[in-house]
Image (cartoon, rainbow over all chains, first blue to last red; front, side, top):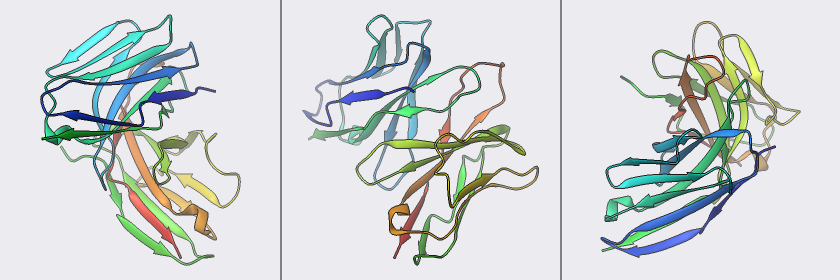
Length: 113
Length: 117
């Protein structure tokens, strides 16, 4: 089955700096890669996703890149703000009947004011 | 448009009791997924259902756990004879009907935090 590894497990940045979180996946059949933000006591919130037919996607301060050959994808947050502080999870899934998401172990991002 | 609804938000059970967790998907969504999150860990897939059908239950423990998504009403995750190791946050997600074979976004509910005493 799919295995997703996520690094780093914790990340502290100064407000205004950029943050990068990296994930690798094992199943070459995976073709959908979402990122979720989870605040304390809440459910995961989808913030951006990318499909295997594109290499990069951007939405305001958030961008995701995908390298299918190397089987890794990354989340980039620019101009970080204190409200970006949360746990971020990457995930991977393949198409077809098996729609389950396989999640990474999470990154606790802290943005210092 | 209301999001995914889960209830109860918090549930306390004693060992040996039954726990029933409910999930109402977003309007227009007919695919439901259940995930479990242990403290300080990521989410682990449990089961994927469509109306009246279990599509994939490869993540469900073989005993004591069951799930359903009836034609009418919410999806139910049922845990019989709970043990302390069942204490976790249980999240439900839903996604819309779409093009066959395509992967669609999964939107998560707020979760049910189960505590087994």
